[in-house]
Length: 320
Length: 298
Image (cartoon, rainbow over all chains, first blue to last red; front, side, top):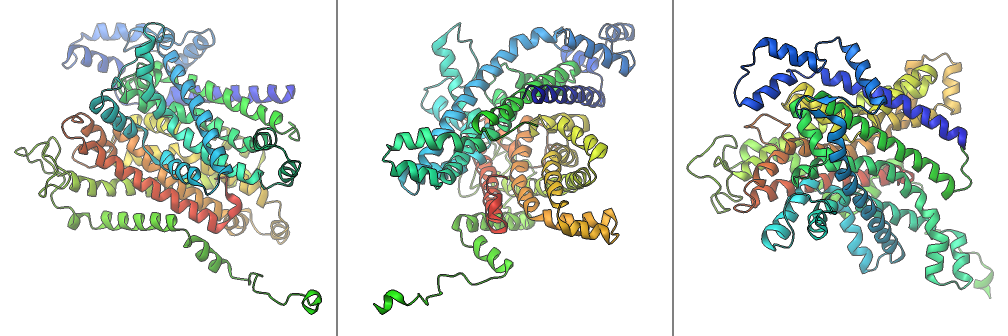
């Protein structure tokens, strides 16, 4: 087991190095100069910066050095926790991340929790009440959940709950430590948007794997022993039907990052998803490299945890 | 008493042997929801092909005298800020969605399947190189990868298609790799090899045809997610150039006038949802009809 985890961590490390190389060099292929774009946006007109000044700035950000040197400098900074300085924000990327990553993580963890609890519960109910009214409501809804474009769902909810009913604020983000009430109201819609795909996907998977499990002989044995439904389902069926669902979790975390890019744009939330989009448009190399690296680290770690959890769910699984 | 000993002669319960195609047709066409999906897709195809005749107005020509009109008999879904008919733009948008979907699936699947088959068949260092490269793309959501690639290439339909193709290569490679690994253990592959067939021949004639059913299901499912991803990209502002019509961009344009004219944003979103739903249903139907064992895997 330990050997397996170590091997997976080493593999993950290799993938992370490849991710940094890929993102670093693909960003350098972007047409246009980040400094020029920055200046154009600052002065609202074409660049009137004297060439010496531009050269000096380029030197300051290390953009005049050979690519290999830039890459090695950046990566050795990353190892020491320094992600470099953003050309556009004129700020350390690590401090930009410190402000924005917690926002994305907060919404993402909530969305993941909603997706898991909501998905498993509704999938389980649909399975044990197969063909009844509950199943007939839940199952079609899961089809809607996996097809609805999240940004459109966001707009739909803004229209209904924000503009028409006036129940919820239509955009923005407040820290829960500042104003808990407002903060909760503001995150309801974004969290639902980020979670919707997960809820539906988990529910579908849970329903079909639960249906598979409750046909097994040992479940019939449990019933014939006269056990209560609650005991049969939770003690005997649940754990075995979780295995296929857990696989989805690894994918789910990546889906949530993807969702956050769109959802944070719709609801004007200052997280890393929105910063990623604007940094791509601003050609802010270091920010894009850093955000994609963070996404890759989180996704790889979660996938490792998922793979380890198989062993707990199914003791027959051995790690070789 | 007699009926007690005589074994049942009723064989009607034993299913007759039917050909694979017959079985495929029977399963595929038996579910109403799959039929619904198929009909939606046929209608969509029809709309895309005959957009020029179906659209009541020119979708690109601004009509500054009639901006942001409410739905009426003249303009069934109203008009946008530039006075362009929403319904006409919706109809032309189907071309964008289908083109991006089909071409990207085509390109990504060809590249992905070839890489996966090579990795699975040869193993060793070849497999390590290919699979690590794929692992590098794997942790990223499709939309993030496509966003980065599209930013490098710039906007426009061609570049969106390239970006989405690159971003969706990994699933094909992984699935094909797994399938090839198990198929190549079969005796008929050993037989081919002992007969002196070339590696190319074995892969093309014996491995890929056997890997085909799961791959065709994967491709159908990917069509839906590609259309979603394209909508997301054009919503974020990376898409086909301005006068062109794309559903995601229409949602984002309409968003600004949500209070005044919500249908501008609602109609294209509904179209996206309907089409993605249809592709998913047809994919589901194909999967069940081709091989029920694939349930849960794809």
